[in-house]
Every structure is written in structure tokens, then in C-alpha cells.
Image (cartoon, rainbow, N blue to C red; front, side):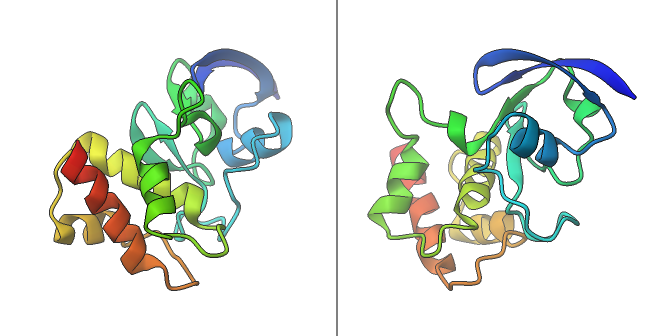
Length: 154
């Protein structure tokens, strides 16, 4: 049954009439056209659907849309500000921390969530923080290097 759900999405207020039981992943992709959030496993294991909710990295494939009511959601499309990429997006490019790009949005948002909770993580903490985001291309070492680069400049 449709209900009105209001939240802040990428710095803009939105109000949608949707079934609050639908996952945020599908509302973002199909209703709002934000396809940077990827569907991977659909079970919260791979991390490709990661978004930030109140600056915490969450799996949007598991999150019911009604649970973001009144909260702030950031997708990869909303991470850049004023036409300037987020420092972690820049570091991903500088370290060639992407190949196919499928995991990249989730990896970046998981990394940003980690940096919000711990601005200066050790390499071991970065590895632990990203261990549930899968990259099948083998760019994991470069991804960790990119997160470390941002820690040095934070």
C-alpha cells in the first residue's frame, strides 16, 4: 500500500508516494532513476548497493524505504559537491582503483562511511571496513591505497 515517505536525498528534499516495504535500492533505481546504486547479490553480502544514511554506509537492498523517512540519504550521484568530486572519488582515479566499475559506487560510499566514523583508520581498519564489499576485478589493493591516501589529507 502506498505511503508518503519524505527524506533528504543528495541534499534535496524528496517526498514519494511508494510502498514503504519496497527496498530503497529499487526506489532509487526505478522510481528516481539513480542507477549508480547497483544490484549485486540482493542479500546484503556484496556491497554494490551501498548508500549513506545519516553518514553511515548501509546496504540499500536490505533497507525498507519507510526506514529512511526523515533521514538523509546520499548515493554516488550526490557525493560530489559544487561540481567537485569527493576526495575519495579523486583518489580512486589517481590510484586506478577501478576496473569494470561495478563495485566502485559501493566501495566509495563504504569508504566514505568508514572515514566519517574514523577519519584516520589504519590499513588494517580499512581492510576490515571494506572486507564485505566485493571486487571481482582484483582492484582491492588499489582501493585500500585510495582510502589511505584520503586519510593522509584529512
